[in-house]
Image (cartoon, rainbow, N blue to C red; front, side, top):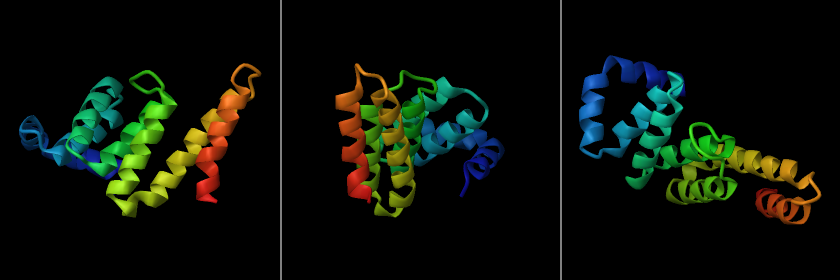
Length: 135
C-alpha cells in the first residue's frame, strides 16, 4: 500500500495506533511515522521510524534511509542511509526493488559530492561501489 493509504488508515485509527506504538509494536510505529511524515511533522516521523527500525521493521528501515539521505527532519548522513538499506533488503528481500532505487539515490548524492575537488576521490569511489553490484 502507498504512503497515502497508510496515512488515511492512521487517521481513522489514531487512538488504537498510538496505544500499540506505545507498547513497542513496530508496525504501529511505522504507520504513525508515515502519518507524521504526510502531515509534514518530519521530526516526529524520524523519531517513530527509528523506533520501528529498532523493532526490526524493514519498510521503516527503507523510509528512514530515504529521509536521512535527504536530511529531512534530521542531519543528512549517507553512510547511515546506506546501512539502513542494507539491513532492510537483507531482512526482507521483497524490498530489493525499492532498495535499488534508494541505493541509486544515495549514489547520486555521492556523485554530487564528487563533483567538488575536495570530495571527488572518496565520494566518486563510494558511488561506484554502490552502483556496480546493482548493474
